[in-house]
Amino acid sequence: MYDKQTLIDFVYENSATHETYPFNKSTSHEKIVWTVMKHNGSDKITAMIFEREGVLYLSLKLSPDHVDEMIKTRGVDRGYHMNKQHWVTINVNDTDLTEQEILGMLAESDALTK
View 1: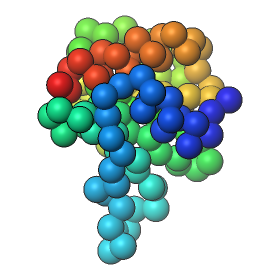
View 2: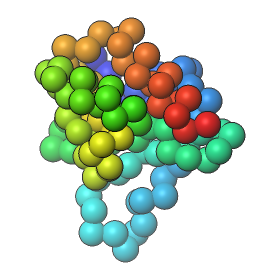
View 3: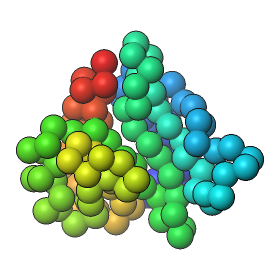
């Protein structure tokens, strides 16, 4: 079972990223706190971590074919507030994905955002 900080640490430990909060302006009407993990080399978004209605999510970039394959898995949907062809959003605490599968997807997102 992940909490937000454990998930942030998991992404740090398994990708070349740094943590940012570019979408959390005090003037924003958005109630979601977005933890954006950007690639150290390119500064492109590799992962996004957020909680919505008490549920913890992780968004990752994948190849379009991999997205189409992964959305067939319970707990994986097309990217929330992201390009639906290239991103998935995972309900990390209620999915059929194994930790190894999430690691593989994180590695793919890391590689695609170099």
